[in-house]
Structure formats: C-alpha cells, structure tokens
Image (cartoon, rainbow, N blue to C red; front, top):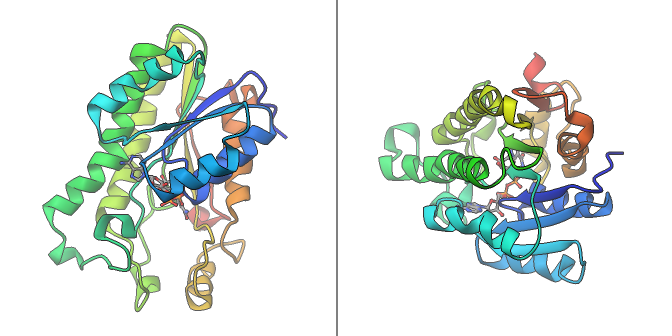
Length: 262
Ligand SMILES: NC(=O)c1ccc[n+]([C@@H]2O[C@H](COP(=O)([O-])OP(=O)(O)OC[C@H]3O[C@@H](n4cnc5c(N)ncnc54)[C@H](O)[C@@H]3O)[C@@H](O)[C@H]2O)c1
C-alpha cells in the first residue's frame, strides 16, 4: 500500500461518499489530512468520526466562494501545517443541485442558472483552488494536485440507463468533468519547473445504495460486470497522493472497471 507519511493532504468536498473514504484511508496510511466541505451534516459526521485524531483537521470551505478559497491555504499554514497534496474532489454530483428528491429536468428545460451553478463548483472552484495552490504552495516545496473527473469526462452518458430512475445524468456534469482534465494538462507543463505535478483521476460508477435495476443496467457497460466500491477508487487515489507517483504528470487515470475501454 501507498506510504503517506510526510504527506499533508488537503481535500475539498471531503464529506461525500468518496471524500470520506479518502480521509479514512489516508489517515490509516500515515498522512495528515486537512478535510474541507460545505457546512452541514456531512461535515459534522466527518468531524465526529475523526475529530479526535491528531492527524486530522477540518475547515469549512465552499469552493465556489472566491474569498474563502483565497484564504484557505493561509489558514492551514497559519495553523502550522503545509499541504503538499491537494485534491480537487468537491463537485455537484446529483440531487444537491436541484434539492433532495428532485430530479434533473430534460436537456431542453435545463436552465442557464443550473448549468452555471454546476460550472461554478465543479470547474471554477477547481480553478480557484489550483490558482491558490500556485500562489501559496507551488515552488515553495514539492507538491501535487489531483483533479477528480469521471467516466463521463471523455465518454458520453448512456442516457437509457437513467430511464425511470430517481436521478439522471446532466449535461453540465460531463462538461465540467472534461474541463477539469483540461486544467490538468494545462497546469502540468506550467508547473513542471517548480516541482509540482498534476494528474486527473476518473472514477467509474461507484455503488452507493443504487437499486438492483440500476446496478444491472450500468454493470452491462462495465467490463468488470459490476459497480465499483469506494475503497477501489481510494486504492488508486492513495497511489496518486503518494511519492510513488512522482514521475507522473498531466495524466488521466481511469478507475472504472473497464467502462472507458469498450
Ligand atoms: N461516486 C461516483 O460514482 C463518482 C464517479 C465519478 C466521479 N466522481 C467524482 O468524485 C468526486 C466525489 O464524488 P462523491 O461520489 O463522493 O460525491 P458526493 O456527492 O457524495 O460528494 C461530493 C461532496 O462535495 C461537496 N460539495 C458540493 N458542492 C461543494 C462546494 N461548493 N464546496 C465544497 N464542497 C462541495 C458535497 O458537500 C459533498 O460532500 C466528485 O468530484 C465526483 O464528481 C464520483
């Protein structure tokens, strides 16, 4: 397993399905973990779970809030820790955009407001975190940024699998996930002579209580024949966050059971 001793990992959107798995696994591998998320139940649950661990700290952060992002590394550094791994993990992934229990409208009825709300979190937020990393970290000591895309970054959604489901895939999601890899390749060369690397991870469909019907539909599209487990994505995230990935930059790593290879 990846050795994360000496790594101080800053994670946005840490309270979600994958973020909370990264926090748990990174603490177990010896990292210091600086978790962040919107205020609310997920953040509270994370602090409840790990608050007593001396290697864990939590900061409220909305990645769409420019002033908040501009302060974040100074706050962490002011409290004595220097993040050398940054995960752009926060995203509007589903019902957060429309409100609990509400589904996405059809494409024709998608509002500019909802499209731009998604851009603000998933893409502009990731840009602002990377820009702040450039200002406060890059060049001062070796560092790495991991941008989180999706199997729907460079592949279109199979819209049919969402028929009759309580959730849908939405256009802004794929757009932002393709865009975040654009940020990766742009920054890779820009940061190369300042000892900073940047890569993208593209997780596949991760099981999170989905119905048998949805699991069966999506699994037919996956070479492994099943949805992924959060820990299977974390296995690769840990490698990317470790020194073992030091000779990689500008890459997109698919962790999707073969979804993207068909
Ligand atoms: N779960 C999957 O199947 C899957 C697949 C591919 C990619 N991903 C990507 O992995 C990442 C994590 O996904 P997840 O499944 O844990 O999603 P999730 O919805 O469970 O968690 C997302 C987290 O981001 C936070 N967030 C949302 N808006 C924010 C904002 N403005 N500022 C700060 N935090 C904000 C939420 O509070 C939440 O804790 C996302 O980037 C997602 O797109 C997930």
